[in-house]
Length: 141
Ligand code: OFO
Image 1 (tube, rainbow, N blue to C red):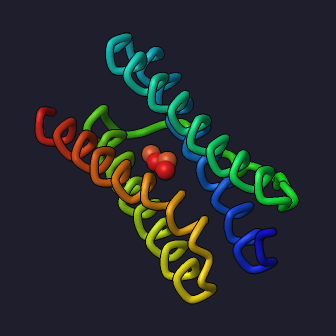
Image 2: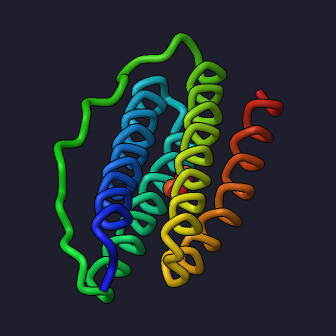
Protein backbone atom coordinates (compact mmCIF):
# COMPACT_ATOMS: atom_id res chain seq x y z
CA UNK A 1 0.00 0.00 0.00
CA UNK A 2 1.40 3.36 -1.00
CA UNK A 3 1.68 6.24 1.50
CA UNK A 4 -0.50 9.34 1.18
CA UNK A 5 2.35 11.77 0.47
CA UNK A 6 3.74 9.65 -2.36
CA UNK A 7 0.25 9.02 -3.71
CA UNK A 8 -0.41 12.78 -3.91
CA UNK A 9 2.98 13.53 -5.44
CA UNK A 10 2.56 10.81 -8.09
CA UNK A 11 -0.91 12.10 -8.96
CA UNK A 12 0.62 15.54 -9.50
CA UNK A 13 3.26 13.98 -11.74
CA UNK A 14 0.56 12.28 -13.83
CA UNK A 15 -0.78 15.78 -14.43
CA UNK A 16 2.69 17.08 -15.35
CA UNK A 17 3.13 14.25 -17.86
CA UNK A 18 -0.29 14.82 -19.42
CA UNK A 19 0.42 18.56 -19.61
CA UNK A 20 3.70 17.68 -21.36
CA UNK A 21 1.69 15.67 -23.91
CA UNK A 22 -0.66 18.62 -24.39
CA UNK A 23 2.25 21.06 -24.79
CA UNK A 24 3.96 18.88 -27.41
CA UNK A 25 0.70 18.36 -29.27
CA UNK A 26 0.29 22.14 -29.28
CA UNK A 27 3.79 22.46 -30.72
CA UNK A 28 2.87 19.83 -33.34
CA UNK A 29 -0.16 21.92 -34.32
CA UNK A 30 2.05 25.01 -34.56
CA UNK A 31 4.55 23.17 -36.80
CA UNK A 32 1.77 21.82 -39.04
CA UNK A 33 0.42 25.38 -39.41
CA UNK A 34 3.91 26.53 -40.43
CA UNK A 35 4.15 23.73 -43.04
CA UNK A 36 6.83 21.92 -41.03
CA UNK A 37 5.33 18.44 -41.07
CA UNK A 38 8.55 16.63 -40.13
CA UNK A 39 8.90 18.65 -36.94
CA UNK A 40 5.19 18.18 -36.29
CA UNK A 41 5.59 14.37 -36.55
CA UNK A 42 8.46 14.46 -34.07
CA UNK A 43 6.37 16.44 -31.59
CA UNK A 44 3.40 14.12 -32.05
CA UNK A 45 5.64 11.19 -31.12
CA UNK A 46 6.83 13.05 -28.02
CA UNK A 47 3.21 13.70 -27.05
CA UNK A 48 2.45 9.96 -27.29
CA UNK A 49 5.49 9.16 -25.15
CA UNK A 50 4.29 11.57 -22.48
CA UNK A 51 0.93 9.82 -22.33
CA UNK A 52 2.87 6.55 -21.83
CA UNK A 53 4.81 8.20 -18.99
CA UNK A 54 1.54 9.23 -17.33
CA UNK A 55 0.26 5.65 -17.69
CA UNK A 56 3.39 4.17 -16.10
CA UNK A 57 2.72 6.22 -12.97
CA UNK A 58 -1.03 5.51 -13.19
CA UNK A 59 -0.28 1.74 -13.24
CA UNK A 60 2.13 2.04 -10.34
CA UNK A 61 -0.56 3.71 -8.23
CA UNK A 62 -3.14 1.07 -9.19
CA UNK A 63 -0.78 -1.82 -8.47
CA UNK A 64 0.00 -0.44 -5.03
CA UNK A 65 -3.58 0.15 -3.97
CA UNK A 66 -3.28 3.92 -4.41
CA UNK A 67 -6.04 6.19 -5.65
CA UNK A 68 -5.63 7.81 -9.07
CA UNK A 69 -6.93 11.39 -8.98
CA UNK A 70 -6.91 13.12 -12.35
CA UNK A 71 -6.76 16.90 -12.20
CA UNK A 72 -7.49 19.57 -14.82
CA UNK A 73 -4.83 19.95 -17.50
CA UNK A 74 -3.70 23.55 -18.08
CA UNK A 75 -4.04 25.15 -21.51
CA UNK A 76 -0.69 25.07 -23.32
CA UNK A 77 0.92 27.90 -25.25
CA UNK A 78 -0.19 27.86 -28.91
CA UNK A 79 2.25 30.08 -30.77
CA UNK A 80 6.02 30.48 -30.74
CA UNK A 81 8.17 33.11 -32.45
CA UNK A 82 10.04 30.50 -34.48
CA UNK A 83 10.67 26.73 -34.66
CA UNK A 84 13.85 27.39 -32.67
CA UNK A 85 11.84 29.13 -29.92
CA UNK A 86 9.48 26.13 -29.75
CA UNK A 87 12.36 23.65 -29.42
CA UNK A 88 14.03 25.86 -26.83
CA UNK A 89 10.75 25.85 -24.88
CA UNK A 90 10.62 22.04 -25.17
CA UNK A 91 14.17 21.80 -23.81
CA UNK A 92 13.35 24.12 -20.91
CA UNK A 93 10.23 22.10 -20.21
CA UNK A 94 12.23 18.85 -20.07
CA UNK A 95 14.65 20.44 -17.62
CA UNK A 96 11.68 21.44 -15.48
CA UNK A 97 10.33 17.86 -15.60
CA UNK A 98 13.75 16.51 -14.62
CA UNK A 99 13.56 18.69 -11.51
CA UNK A 100 10.11 17.26 -10.71
CA UNK A 101 11.35 13.67 -11.12
CA UNK A 102 14.31 14.37 -8.85
CA UNK A 103 11.96 15.81 -6.20
CA UNK A 104 9.95 12.58 -6.40
CA UNK A 105 13.10 10.50 -5.96
CA UNK A 106 14.00 12.59 -2.90
CA UNK A 107 10.52 12.03 -1.50
CA UNK A 108 10.70 8.28 -2.16
CA UNK A 109 13.95 8.17 -0.21
CA UNK A 110 12.60 10.27 2.66
CA UNK A 111 9.49 8.05 2.84
CA UNK A 112 11.55 4.85 2.51
CA UNK A 113 9.30 3.93 -0.42
CA UNK A 114 11.58 1.49 -2.22
CA UNK A 115 8.99 0.48 -4.82
CA UNK A 116 8.38 4.09 -5.93
CA UNK A 117 12.13 4.71 -5.83
CA UNK A 118 12.73 1.81 -8.20
CA UNK A 119 9.90 2.82 -10.56
CA UNK A 120 11.29 6.38 -10.65
CA UNK A 121 14.75 5.22 -11.73
CA UNK A 122 13.29 4.58 -15.18
CA UNK A 123 12.23 8.24 -15.31
CA UNK A 124 15.64 9.47 -14.14
CA UNK A 125 17.26 7.69 -17.11
CA UNK A 126 14.49 8.78 -19.49
CA UNK A 127 15.02 12.43 -18.57
CA UNK A 128 18.71 12.22 -19.46
CA UNK A 129 17.65 10.99 -22.93
CA UNK A 130 14.87 13.55 -23.36
CA UNK A 131 17.04 16.51 -22.34
CA UNK A 132 19.75 15.30 -24.70
CA UNK A 133 17.31 14.90 -27.63
CA UNK A 134 15.71 18.32 -27.26
CA UNK A 135 19.08 20.02 -26.70
CA UNK A 136 20.42 18.45 -29.91
CA UNK A 137 17.31 19.62 -31.79
CA UNK A 138 17.94 23.19 -30.54
CA UNK A 139 21.58 23.00 -31.65
CA UNK A 140 20.57 21.78 -35.13
CA UNK A 141 18.27 24.77 -35.77
FE1 OFO B 1 9.36 14.32 -21.63
O1 OFO B 1 9.27 13.56 -19.96
FE2 OFO B 1 7.85 12.64 -19.37
O2 OFO B 1 8.76 12.12 -17.88
